[in-house]
Structures are given as structure tokens and as C-alpha cells.
Image (cartoon, rainbow, N blue to C red):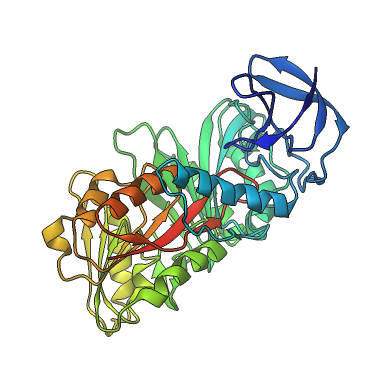
Length: 416
């Protein structure tokens, strides 16, 4: 079947056919003329008859099999325009037709500092380590990755060999790797308590490859938590020039470049000597830079991250007041009366957004709200709540930390 691709869908698949009878073709781009094999509303490319002017050579040999990337075949200019269009479309669905959506700030290749891989034991000292195939649980044995930081990719062969030695046949494991500023932090997730032999093997592996820390999470427990197996140096990152020591499995912005893009949107709105509340604060991505000018109260549901933030801050006490609170913001949002007296609120909720918290913010008198989101659709929904509550939305900046994927961060400033 011959088709012409006319647009890219929200997941990055090319779309052919008229409205109501669309066909979705992964790894295609508008302007492609293709021979495809059809299966329902999905199709796969049999042959590229005439390539689009927007098509380029993919950067990775795993592309089209590995589920990590969907858009390596798309030239950067068209790719950036498509990402910006995703934000415009999401906002238009909520009645925002005249918002200034800026060009995306895109993180470069080799900048992703955290990742979650999967592994499976193959027996006889072998293991497969990598990302799942698109739409499948089959693992791609990762040999290269142009997205991840170089130090993560460089460790993969040794880590694969190590896992092959310690994993049982068909044993499954998730491997979270974070590139802290003083070394790699690795969290292994599998079922069961690590044996004494495994603990010793982990310590030896960390020593021989200069790993900062390795931890274990027993996923058979009702409430799994990370157990540190070896820590040669406590991993840390810097926010606003201040060193923050992070617990295992910490959420960080995916790239340092993306983090800088997001925090730079907040900094001009800080009020010297004022008060700021950071909602869904994590380990202080926004709280810590804000302390240079304002008193800060940080709210976060993860107690380990709050504890790490407090201890790190008080190693060198700031000149501005700082406090932090462990709080499940989905059950107990920060209420209108609690928001009184704050000059700035920063909110960076999970992908589902923060519907209840937005209602409280929309009813408040906080002069400035900085909203960050990793989902343009829930950003648009929550923005509508704020605007209907009397706030004005400033320019919207897409921040692309997940290169060659459909994922996208968004940030904007709302004012009374």
C-alpha cells in the first residue's frame, strides 16, 4: 500500500489518510512517500519510495527497535517546530488561542543524566541490559546511546557483565542510574533480599569502576525502600552554587541544561527579602536558587528528599530563612489561608498535574506563580484554572529534556 505522510501525531508517528480514516506509521515524517504494510490503523514501513526533505540519518544503530527514541530520523528544525506545536495544540484545547509560545529549549545529545534500564538474566554469566522495544517487553541489549551522558554509556559493558554474574536465569531487574556531579549513583530493583555474596560483589564492582554509590530496592515488599549497599562517596548535585546531597532514586530534572532553562524562568521574578513557597520541591531544584533572595518554604511528599534537602542546606546555613515540610499534596494541598503572605509560588507537579492544588492557588492572592509541567495537556488544564481564577499567563517556554521523544516540559509565569 502506498501512502503520503502529511503530519506527525502527538506520539511522533507519521499520519497518512483523510480525517476519520487515518493510518499511523512510526518512523515516518511529513513529505515521505512510502510503501507500507497495513495492520488496522497502524502500519510499518516496507520501503521509502521518496524521502521527505525533513528526514535525516538516525544517530543510533538501535533506532526503530529501541523504544527510547521515536524521532531521530527528523531534522532538528522540523522537530523543534513539531514540539512547539504540541504545546500550542494543548493550550488551544483549553481555550488559549493567543498565548506566546516560545521556541523550545532543547538539551543536546549526550546530556541525559538519569535513566532507568531493565535487565534480565540469561544464565551462564550472561545478561541483557537496555530499554524495551517499542510496544513490547523484549529488551534491546544497549550497545550505544547518543542521548545519555558519556559516563553512563561507558559503564554499560562492565555493568552488563556484572549483572550476568549475579543474576539468576530469567531474573528481572530495573537499574536506575544517575550521573551525580561526583560520580554515578546506581539503584538496583529486584525481588528478594540481597545475599551476603551479592553485597560483597556490589562493593567490589563499585570499587573497581569508581561508582559513588550502589543501592538495592526489594520489590517484593509492600512498601519498597532503597537500602544502601555501598557508598564510596555521597552523591551530590549543585543548585544555585550550593551542594545538595541526594538520596538513592532521587528525582532530578533529566538534564542540567533543562534544569537551567527552567530555573532561569523563575529567577527574574524573585523578590528581594520576600517569601517563596516551592510546591513539589523534590531536593530543591527551585528552592535552593531562590534562597539567594527570598525566604523559602519547601513542600514535598517524599520524606527522604526533604531530609536530604534540609541536611544539605544546613551544612552552610543560608542568610535567608528556610523550612521544609513532608506533605502529601494530593491529599493535603497547601490551602488558601496557608498561601497568605507569600510573594511567589513555584509548582512542579508530577505528570498528572495537581488539580486540587491549582484550585487553592487560583483562589489565593499570591502575586506570582511559576508553573512547571512535564505534560502539556495537564499544564493547559491547570493553566485554565489559574486564568479563570484571575491570573494572567506570560509566555510559555517548551523545554525539551527528552531528545527525540514525544515528551516535553513546559514552564510559564502567572501574575495577578
